[in-house]
Length: 137
Picture: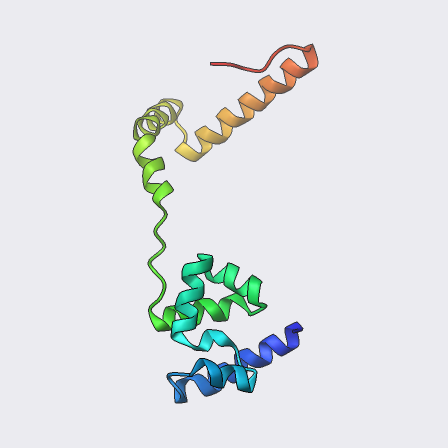
């Protein structure tokens, strides 16, 4: 399926889907229409593959349309990232230290991070030039 066909399917889906809220899987297959128009099939594939992007890659569908149908069917959860909550919880003290250091330096937190990174990279370059070891804690 080339990209022109994919976008023709998108246009067709936008025209046909609102008038036909539930497609049987057999009808979709018989007419050569995208299987993600069937809620049960889409839910099963999302459970199996884990994401709309993977589903789209495996089946050759436009991933934005797969994600749109998943949202329309209520199959997507809000963007929960468990690692993000863990990261924030683990680094609260570090963020406080960075805030204190940046206030002492009279710059924003982001600017302080950039300056610290630039200093670290300069130290690494100097150590490499001298044949020394990397900076360690």
